[in-house]
Length: 337
Image (tube, rainbow, N blue to C red; front, top):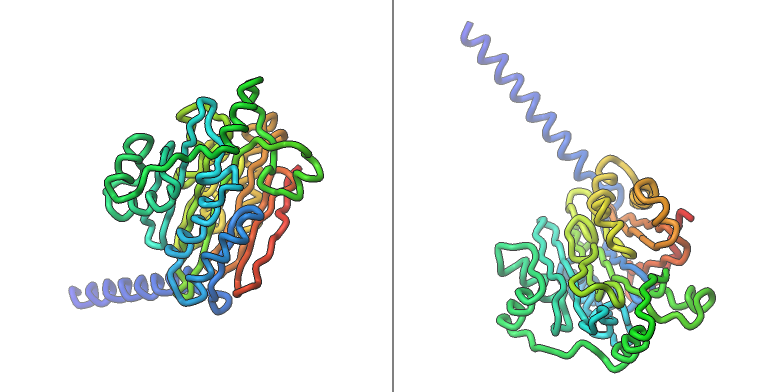
C-alpha cells in the first residue's frame, strides 16, 4: 500500500513539474528573434534615442542605454521641460524629478531635487548604492553632493525671463503638447509655458528591458509639487518577463490610475502595447471625464518581443523609435479625443 501511495505521489509531482515547465516556456516564448530597440516620448526623443543606440548597437545593456539617452535632453538648454533648461516653479526654483528601472526589478528615483543637472544619474545611484527607492529635496541633493556631483545653478537666463513674465499675472493653465514643436507652431502660436517628460524604454540584444524617465515638472508649479515621472508604477514601470511602459502629460492623472503599472499588467493579460495604452487612457477618462478633455496624457509601451505602441488623450502626442543606426523616426500617436 505504501509503495502504491509513493508511486501516485511521485506521478503527481512529475506531472506538476512538466506543467510548470510548460507554463514557463509559454511565458518566455518569443514570436520573433530579438533585436535591440529603443523608444522614447516626443520629438526630442530622436536625439536621446541616438545616444542610447550608441550603447545598444554595440551589444551594450539596456540600463546603460536609457541612462545615457535621457541625459541628452537633460543637458539641452533649449528644452524647457527637462533638466537644466527646465522652467522653474512659482517661487523661481528649478526642481527636477527622475527615475530608472532595470530588468531585475531594481529601481531608483529622486524628486524635487535642486542644483543637479542630471537627476537620472542620481536616481541610478539611489538604486545601486542605497537600500531605498526614492530620495527627495534636500536629502537627494545631499546624497548627490556626497557622491561627487557638482552644485549647479539650473535657472537659465531664458527660464528666469519667462518666470518673471509669468509673475505679472501669476496664472497657471497647462497647454497641451508644448513638446511637439510642429504641433504648437500651427495651433498654439506664441505659447511658451508648459511641462513635460522624456520617458525611454529599451530592449537590448540579451533580451533585457530597462526604462528611464526625467522631467523638470510643470512650469510654475507649487514649490514641492511632484508629478508621476519619478514614481515607479506611475511614470515608469518595467517587468522583464512582460514589457515596460512610461507616461507623459499631467502627472496627477497618471498617479491616480498607477498608469504605467496598469499598462504592463494589461500586456500580461494579453493586450498589445497599443491596446494596453488605450485602456489606460480610457481609465483616466472614466475616472475624471471633466478633467480629461482639457489635458494631455500619453502612454508608451514596449513588450518583451520588441513590439511597441502608444495612445494619448489628445491629438499631438509623438514618440521616437530607433531600431537601427541612422534609422530614427518619429511616430504620431493615436488619441482618444
